[in-house]
Image (cartoon, rainbow, N blue to C red; front, side):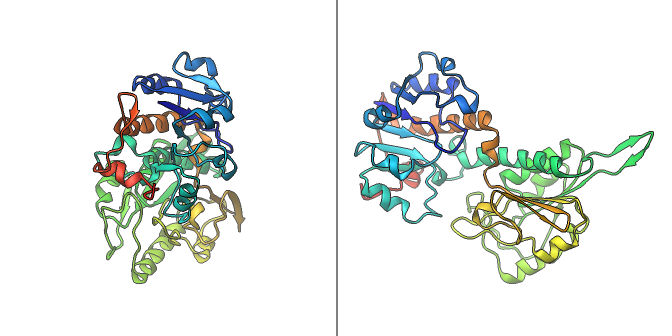
Length: 359
């Protein structure tokens, strides 16, 4: 069985890294990778050693039995892929309702890694959590770079500087990593989440947990926020506005799977913030948690910097690629036996991630 790994078309990450490629080869497969596919993620071709063979993009599409990519292949490439093979990527069918039908029209079977259940059993395959952890970390560094003041308290001969106040909205994987990173940098941190279960995790990291009573709690929502009543959202916005006026940095992470992200920061709230403050919105690609967010842009409003970016993990391509490759290896162990594809649709992980049921 041949596994092909094409170079990403608009992303510095790569779906397989040298250390993991050797382990993947141990499953009894042959690995083909496009020339220089790992270069933008800081992996030299020679680092892969004898784990795989470098070939052209065209040969990968025509020779592989399974194609592995970080992002879905462009439509132009799908036309070049031989029929009947398996694609593994992040197709996001919750947000693109037509992707399954499109892949089936090309006669391509597909597994979407973002559909893997976010359960303890599947934790080692959870690409969403891996990328969210990086995004939460990088969000704090980005905020620190834009903030015109220190994060930690500083006592100097020239005077004392108070610590920055950081507010994190959403205490999932990204939010918890943001909290931990901001605390390491010396900031005062508080966080809010609709799940009361997050309270213990937030406080264990040294942050203060903000409670807004009456939230709909769904611990099976796969790491996403759940839709809340308008009454709760109004009370949450009021509480956020009260806290935002005193915050130097706000990091928002709340997304509802398959739906537009909830607005947690209104224009009115932003207007209450002090000049120089920073908002980093990790839900930008699904509309944003801030009313003024524009995806992949930095908006300046009355001295406030609003950074919209849902793909901060791509700005750390080496570690992001390593985590992704490990996640993928653990998933492939489920569907490859003795070097051949073995699809057990009685397995919940395999069943949930398969998005082309008509093939």
